[in-house]
Length: 386
Length: 194
Image (cartoon, rainbow over all chains, first blue to last red; front, top):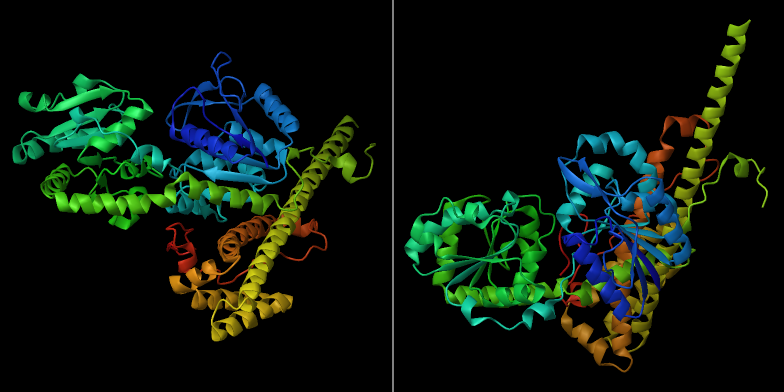
């Protein structure tokens, strides 16, 4: 199968959607499919052979933050050329509703189109205003995929219609086979994520730390991620600070080893998550998970069966649950085995198979993807010459 | 004099713009109808695949006679059903499949038979893809209906003689034992098939 994938965000910036596309493309190529990914990238960024650059994304303020988007005639022309040269059997667009490459591709293409909706943003004014513009483009999508039941619900509320739920994939074997690191073991709690991004919830965990240390002295908190380390521990008493270790940005290998080593992984996120891939990675590595009770997390944790939940931003509840889990090796062993069983549905073997099933469903008997030669008034009146 | 000419010109431009808009909307509707046709063909293919595998299993002699007859009967009815009875017949096949493959033993019996693993994976693929195809079809139907309800489309009869699109409603919940690898798609009510 010839598959064209459109990535809406810069290839040179790390992010969940980019990683998902990279892993999906790798998985499909290993299965013998021909894959081409169109992504925004600086011209001098080294790209894997299957990625085609759609030009540099322009930083513009959008939706409350500065987003890097692709738009304009140059980008549109590149999209059309890529579609034309590719001759794809199926086109897979990610985030078709964001005003970037996804929407441009949706506008320019005709044929079997699959779209994955990653975010579950609350309905914005811009979305309501843009609805009549978006709708004709989104109508072309033959099959919609939502990454979680939560994302599907928002999609149905905002745009109508329906979608199948296929979760993001994780290479379970990579995490379960990682080697634990001795210096990260022994009464450790793990946290991975941007330090200075409040939504990732590190402040809640820091507030819970004194209580955890009071009841279990010697517990260490390992933090992996970018951000200002000094500011993060400002509120902690002096002796607690030494129990927090900052590892900075870690490689994929070290991330897996960290998750293999810790006694407990805590995800204190406060919102804005539509999936929670890090929880799946933690469970794949066999780390017991304690997470904030967000819709998306609750679903990834199988309604709370495969990991424990605490009320969002409730530091006292977090400390309680963490101490209880650290005191109870049997409960942790049980969570480990439940988690290991539960993550099989997120393995690329399963997820990739489901995505291919969607491709085949829409591509069966349909013509291949082409650029959308909008039939003008002339053709419809029979005036066009061939 | 010049004002009259100006008004004629304005009216002319308005008519041309309206024509362009109508033409564009008609094209959009045309594409939506084509999408429904493609989605319906894909759904038909999946349903037929599912009924064929079920019938094959029923006649293969790997299941007990009662289960075989039940499966044969419903699969046959699903394949032969007229359009207006199709939804009911296919739902009954779903129920029969769930009843026959309620236990992991039945799935194992199929897998153990010669050629069984292929048949089992074909059936698994069919029961998993049917709900997908149906969801994509109904999504296309909803999009077309939204456009067709538009005033402009009704007044200018842009839909032509194309029949008003109807969703395909059926019970397509697959047998849990077939999806025992712990994977599943969630259904309309958000329950998970595991």
